[in-house]
Amino acid sequence: MNKNKVTVYIPTHRRPKLLKRAIESVLKQSYKDIELIVVSDGLDPETDKLMDNYLIRYPNLIYLKYDKPKGACVARNLAINKASGFFITGLDDDDYFTEDRIEFLVSKWEDKYSFICTKSIFEKRLDSVFYALFSKLNKDLIFGHKDLIKFNCVGNQVFTKASRLKSELFDERLPALQDWELWIRLIKAKGLAKRFRHRTQVKDFDHGFSRISNFERRVRGLSIVKDKHSINNNEIELIKTLWKMEYNMQISMHEYLKLLKGGPFWPVLKMSLREVKKLAQSLNLSNHN
Image (cartoon, rainbow, N blue to C red):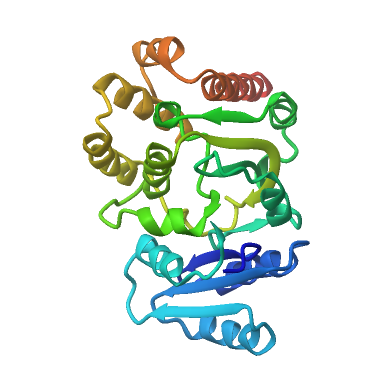
């Protein structure tokens, strides 16, 4: 087996313009020994047309598709099972890589970790003072499954051996939280994971399409994850409160105080500062009126 080859998989669903940006970010990687697998979750003529153009030019690209949509997890699992790389990582079709992502991850790999990952760049926050501040404060982080249950510090992509991902796969029953739940299983099976402060993936929330998860689907998924991993009720409530803040939903003072006491420090601090900023902006607007 070629131990240098990295498989990148991209599930997509009728978003050819975004898919093109994602594919280009993989093709422009400084690291060249890459197999790219794109899985279309349902037929789409525009996606087929785009992929036909790439397939002519890039022999390292594989295109798979389902006639009818089966869900992102089914598409991801198909790609994982087809992967021939020694290493593997994923990419959502509405995000994209920095040019050094794969080279960086390959250079940082240590077999003692179940997987490694990096921080992400959030497009709409690039001009934020808070974003710049926390980017400087962030450090490399080694964590276990209990840390990950408290807060998903990973995000939606990891870098690991393909054999490890093939042995676990995404849980296709889950309506949301599939990535988080899989990362928990990987850590339980293979040990601690490591996140690097270096940012190598750009997440785009401003493209006009909906992201995969929403609050209601997360809550439904959480009930399944709770049973699979024996998460206690207190941790469940803290997770839900964090999500409420993320979705700009109102929380009670009791919920907020519990979060301050038992929640993860940095996410709680960042979200609290965001709320202070929103309050200051609203007060400023009212003063002008």
